[in-house]
Length: 304
Image: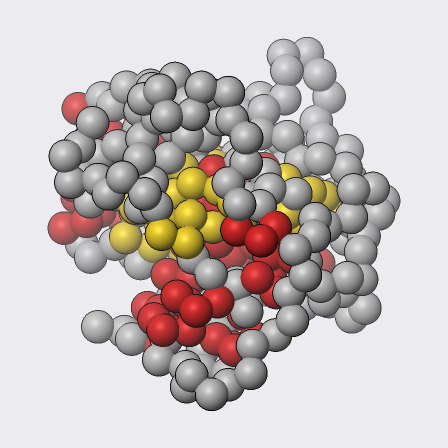
């Protein structure tokens, strides 16, 4: 464990985001009730079991303001910046860039470092979901939008078809993001150890000025540190639910990487593969996408 970690994470809530963007204190905050998003929406998985079909499209959506969007008070930040000019790489399961209206014009398919070709298409759906949280478009009749809706997302696949990964695949994903000039690199995945290649890839990204964001405890097990979240200089992120309360976890505190920021990651609504329908998702990986989007807002408003 790194001695530089703070024992308690700081919440990425409206006040903190407003302060980072120098929003006037007299601006009225948006109302944000401490509630979960629609429980009728299907869950987005982080992996697909061997032999199981890909995640089907959702046929449901909600017109409500997602609790996370109100909790972070994003409309205040959007008065100053919407993330234009910043590229955020999401190193995950790829992205469905063809069938999801919320991602049109926002998400570009990068390389598939686990195979060949591009990361277009997403059997699991997790990368699609996170890309929408970072920079999804606001559609007619739907109040949900990404944290930085004018940022550009580069989707990189660093998993097999089922969503499994390795330290070396994550290293390749981070290197691909760095080579593409991503200012923010979100790694919602994690492994129990870090290869020399992963350590070198993260260091190289940081040397180029990129912020690497990662899930502090992707599995929610709390059994041990996760990489790359545990590496020096990486922004480790944990999840909170409506109202800012952390979720109940089995074994939390037994050795998981200590987070530096917390963000929404319980019953969060977002787009998914296959069409315009919505899903709900959760976990530290989901929370990392909110921090990556917030970093894009800050980088757009404060380029230096």
